[in-house]
Length: 415
Image (cartoon, rainbow, N blue to C red; front, side, top):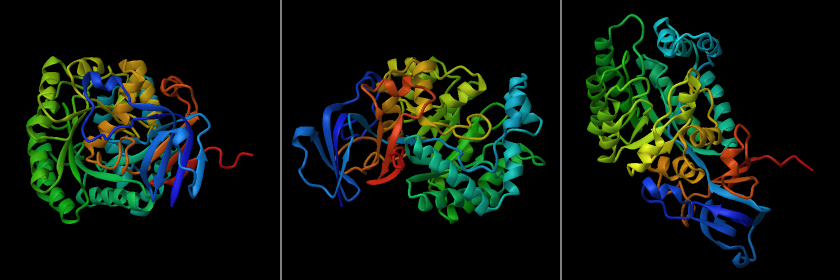
């Protein structure tokens, strides 16, 4: 089947995209104005000036002066969870800290209690609705973590749901085992670390449920040494490392990520010059989660310093019920521009090619190039890229196409 998208006002991210876009290069998004895009059997076949568009296609879509981008890739989500936690939102408004909520049995432990009472089918039903919501805001591929189970069977349950979501929702999904997200009640931290390494990791590996392993390297959760021990055990079992690093304190998470050759270090609100230098000498993808920092009232990751140091940056939603109850990557783009002072072009790289690199999807996603998947965003009528993050809080997406199939069309029922 062939599809022609014609009369594109501007086609963005037109490059092969086999490596991360770093530093000053992030300021430029290669584009073509007044363009066409031709799709064959779910893959990008070719593109060029509108006047050179093929005369025939099975389906012709008139972009009507809209922008076309590759879909966003969300490289950090906790989208499988049993319930939202708006009661803790009110507690935060009243001045209770994230740490105090956690110490009182809220936070991650709150979600773990509810998840243990939730069936796999119930979890799947809840999460599949959230997947459709994020697709409608331009997300076309996801990483999904466990971490609200905190027991062998419940962690496996979360990962099975995550795998099932990718198959049933027909969207690319990578799965991450995050057993070391918190310490459940009634067990010491050392004993729980032994359980994660000795019981959980072998069980996850036996069912081939996780592509990656992650750990919350943070004061009050898991130390740098414990994090390295857990990550290395996961790597030995066939998973690659990712790290929750330096969210609430300078926790050693960056050092743990570099030591274990992690694909990404995520959060990074509390990093200094030393950590930036360490990241610059590594292949670890710095990943900012502006939704979480904004929701918790934390300082933002120092994006400008990282870019000036020649680093790439990825942006993800951290969609979860406690600290970032939104999977809207268009909103995260706005926050990156407003709060982190990233330009719209830098933000676009951070939502497309750089997360594709960190999730090992660069050969098929992240940019517009022949042979890549025809997974695309067609925006609302817009004259320039900057309108998309500028128009914050609003959904600037008119259509989302995954592998050449229209998955969201705002105007489908309009006359």
